[in-house]
Image (cartoon, rainbow, N blue to C red; front, side):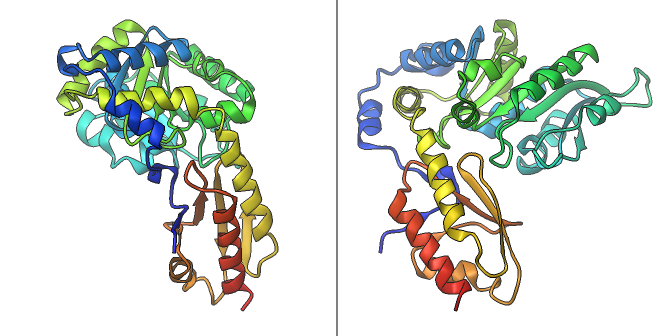
Amino acid sequence: MSVVDLRSDTVTRPTAAMRAAMHDAELGDDVFGDDPTVNALQERIAAVLGKEAALFVPTGTQSNLTAIMTHCGRGDEYIVGQMAHTYRWEGGGAAVLGSVQPQPLEHQPDGTLALKDIDAAVKPDDSHFARSRLLCLENTIGGKVLPLAYVAEATALARRRGLATHLDGARLFNAAVKLEVPARDIAGHFDSVSVCFSKGLGAPAGSCLVGPRDFISAAHRWRKMLGGGMRQAGVLAAAALHALDHHVERLDDDHALAQRLAAGLQGLPGLTIEPPQTNILFADLQGERAAGLMAHLKSRGILATGLYRLRFVTHLDVDADGVDRTISAMREHLQA
């Protein structure tokens, strides 16, 4: 039985064409700055997002951490959402490794942070307080797309209050495809942006941090300290370049499959669906059948996550047949 893996869009395998690009990649030593494929990727993603420079790193977690540690010093503070990766899902790295204090805020139902809450969270310049230095937003956040007008307002507020701005854009291209705008239209509002190649874009690993040239130069030192300096990293950069060429526009297919899944699950007993905007569908299940659902799905060759809510993520390796199998398995369990 083939497996339908809906746990995350990180589970994709490189396509045959991507593997070929990786095999043929021209290589050097990126720690010395002479891997031509890494350099080409950094130049490409910086241009795509409208920034001066970029830095290739192993993971999105390291990219975000490097950004926070570059923007902030020991005893500084970043303002962030309660459910944002840079606060909740990345091991507390900014606090543990960077001595940077997070100031988490509650999200609004649409995933935004209320402007009044951001404004109120900025601390006075007083020795009693951590120094407010940075606003971190995430787009998409839980699969939700931040409206462009909101992004403009929030980052303008941050600038007025003397804060730098960073975007965790792990799924930035999902947001751009959904909004039908170039990714640079979103990225342009932020001082720095992290973008991931190993989620919806389907590469096996790697992220880039983009921003001003002097910022990226400073980030390079933090990357080295955090163990992110790789050698012949062009084999991974080649996958990312292939993804930028071939896997961006098709993200709309993933969004359509998430909608198909949501439509097929509507009305099932005890199941409440949160309509997906992009490729992530959340659901809440109540009743006696909730406890056995994950085991039932696994017995039918379907993998999902239920860490705090049911979550199904569509991606490059999921097709309509896999979505329909998932719907059938869910109906079989919940309508029995």
